[in-house]
Amino acid sequence: IDMQNCDEVLSSGAERVSVVRAIMQAEQPTLVTQYFLSQLNRYQALRSHNILPEKI
Image (cartoon, rainbow, N blue to C red; front, side, top):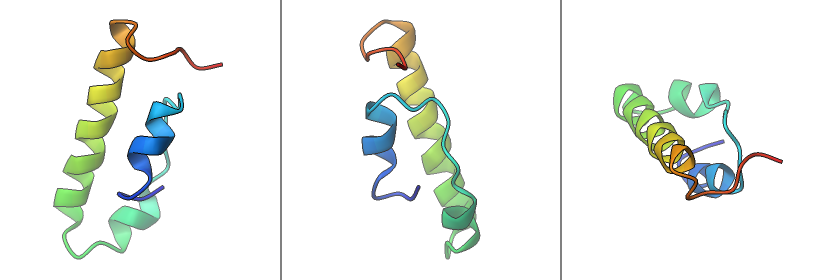
């Protein structure tokens, strides 16, 4: 999973993603980590309000 496909993966119902390679290969790993955390938090909040379908 990388910054280009994270949104697609999370919107399809994934609750966890492995982003080690994306972070380790990033020129700015702190910013990339913050991006992934914000995406995960966003989708978690949406799911908690039943806005996205639950994981099948």
